[in-house]
Amino acid sequence: MKNGPYGSCNTDILDCNIASPVWDFYLEKATLFHQNNRCEIHAVLPVPNSLDTLFLCNDTLAFTSQKSFKVLYEHFFRDSFLDYHIVCKTVRKFQQFPQYKVPMTDGHQLLVPLESPWGAAIWLNPLKIYQIHENPHQTLIEFEQGPLIVSTLRKRSLRWLSLEALLLFAVMRRDFAFCPRELTDLKKNLPDCGHSPFLQTILLALPRDCQQLPLNKFSQTYFTEAFKWHYNALTSDPN
Image 1 (tube, rainbow, N blue to C red):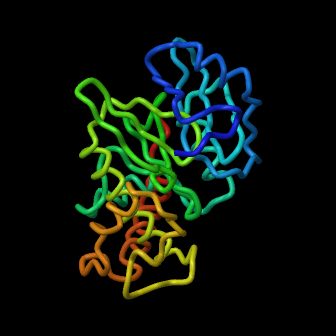
Image 2: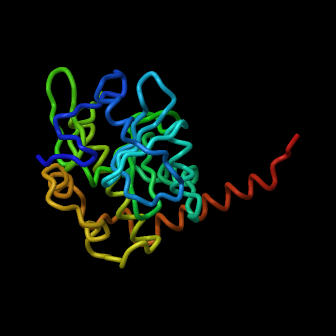
């Protein structure tokens, strides 16, 4: 394990349900989160006993007094043609993708909610997870740098959630041309995943070629849902 940035180490533990001196340490080092901050986000954590949200980024810490969903929605989609609500409608047309804990992506970054995404949820970037440790009492998520995050989900559930999220991420990057398209191997539509033991296990389970997800099927379904969304908004009776 590597020592973390922010003057921390990998033995620090953050539990979003329990306030602690470790939380105080991270919040003291955090600066105000700005929407134009394009740093890569590793984790988004609701602060216990507070409305604040803490962002763990590459080598910085940031916080905001808003709930995680609202901040992430504005951060990811302010300058994007994509819309999270329409992505949610689209993924429900495909059984291969998460139906409830729908990932948030702009084609370049990926975050997965561990609870209902609409409120103050924990969001994690599965591409930055190094390993997951499980004991009878709790699950600890370890990143390459920074603190361990406590999760109520078990290791198997986190693996499955990450697998579905990475499959969606690969398909969206391919269909919306966020990367040079690789048509024969879905894995090659993902950014470099490094040497994380956790990710190597996930990538082995990721299908190379999903016959049920041919090129542009997802993007065409997305634009159909977007048309219906905007048409209904224009034709609905305000009264």
